[in-house]
Length: 76
Ligand SMILES: [Zn+2]
Image (cartoon, rainbow, N blue to C red):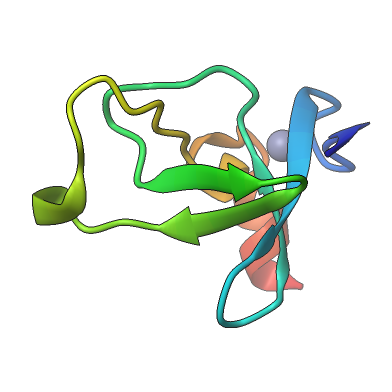
């Protein structure tokens, strides 16, 4: 698990590797009910659909969804 900062807004993010795609993705470090990503191991995470969510499971949200500078991500 590596911690870092968003290059756009400077907020702390949690870098994880997505299972399946293998892509690196920054997550907001605080779990949220609105999240759709679960941590599945050291530095790895997986997307979940609403129906797959388990009670008590910590859900995280991609930082791209909450970044105040998200427009910069998209334009690039
Ligand atoms: Zn950001």
